[in-house]
Amino acid sequence: MGRRIPHAVLFDRDGTLIRDVPYNGDPSRVEPLPTAAEALALLRAHGVRIGVVTNQSGIERGLVTRAQVEAVNARVEAVLGPFDVWRMCPHVPDAGCLCRKPAPGMLTSACAALRVPPGAAAMIGDIGSDMDAADAAGLRGILVPTEATRAEEIRAAHEVAETAVDAVRVLLAEGADG
Image 1: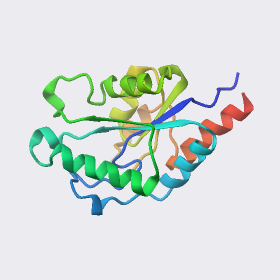
Image 2: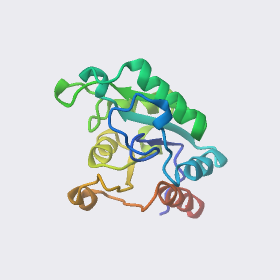
Image 3: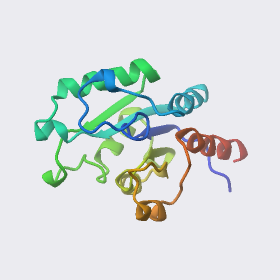
Image 4: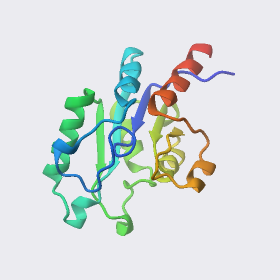
């Protein structure tokens, strides 16, 4: 009853792939987290599509421009390699949009763009809204806690891994067995 290797893995950006710098509009402040590059390399080596789904409310708040966030995203790609899909929500939490995590919109949109059913995809993130979005969209969610992750988010997560590469190894090892 093993699981298959996912066809796609979506990542939260801030706190999962790169150090979280609130409302970052400066590409020079992009700092990959220690295991991000290895996690992405493992997925690429196994032919797994990868994407980023990121809440960026600083745009609607007027703290950063869309162009600044896109420049940061471009720097993430320059440092960590290309992603197959990017989805970004510029809305504030109370906007009522369907894209902002914990809503499933960005995840379902990313899966559609990749032509991967949500049930054949996984989400790796560092906070509860990442896991709630995964649940709502029908993706497998793996929480990689940071200092920003609340204890109740860790308790509520279906799966927890110490690092992004640990989460990816779980996804790949189960596929090898199943």
